[in-house]
Image (cartoon, rainbow, N blue to C red; front, side, top):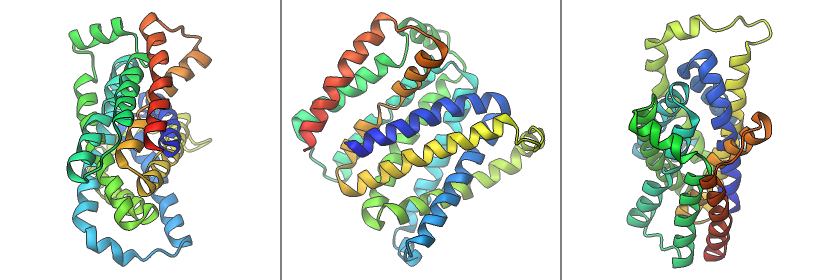
Length: 288
């Protein structure tokens, strides 16, 4: 569960920075810069730890599938953050835990305790409540707020990607599994970069490395914390438990908005806070 919470911190920070970067330089450059940084980091780690790259060939189909799904999930998620209000996009993103947990139980035969499953459900509901103003969420969905459909696509994609990454971590070890996933993901971005090359030409000048690019790299660094924690936790324990704990990530963005933007919590968000804490406790006790 600790690995999942560490992943949530990384992904929450990445979400916040990714929204800022996407609105300054566009979603495609923002996600590509961040993921290039992630791939470079994992390559250095693989070389430093002397991993046997030949082992990847035994799970090439899984790595390829994970690369395609993960690339799609990141691209659509950043696009949703660029287009729509975080109050709508973020809580939808938190539902990625549902398909991921279902797949871990159905295909990996994981059997979390009843207490852990209840804790996971309470935590996901709490996060959905704490990460948004329900009135704004209802209005956004009713009025088809920009980014809503892309957020739904990304949530499903992240759920499948999280499960596949967890399997790769168990079969190959988290370092090799995550490296293979990042390289496959990067390969999937090449056609997107070619199609949207004009978005890169219009980037801020490199003098001082435009603010948007710097924030995109910061989002990538935060994402590294998220994916390495998630992968290490998946190798060590149940994928379903790590997924449930990591679903707390939208609450990080809420905390940042309260701390830096002086925003106040509405009633349903206080209810969410009251649910997340006991949900995590049940999850922790049920998985110990």
